[in-house]
Length: 172
Image (cartoon, rainbow, N blue to C red; front, side, top):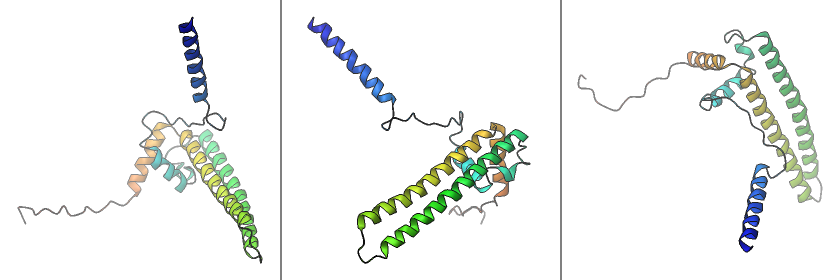
């Protein structure tokens, strides 16, 4: 009897722990972007190129974007640019409010801290949205287009000069 109660308690405890581990602490479902197998090495470079080429739209002809891909990338770029402009305007208002708080005779440090946190939260939010938009743009491309992008970038970069090896050649 004691053994069966102990077993039931262990089973109940393990199922509760398993359930608790499945949800993130804030209760929201975990968000992931599946880039595909082997993409972990290409992703940082693709993200950088995506930012520098307006979400790959400047490379549309070289990587042979389909009309559907072009439309999707244009929508991603427009959505991000619209969001960015709106949030940066919010940031400007927050900065103006902070300056107003700092020009009073008695400065409320709690209000100043809150306003600084609000401004930084906007900056963080914009950065996260940018990362999400670039990842969405990367996933819009095919694997072949990912490779074309990386090859194009390698071709466009000037060759690096080789550093002297530091060895003395026999033939010098």
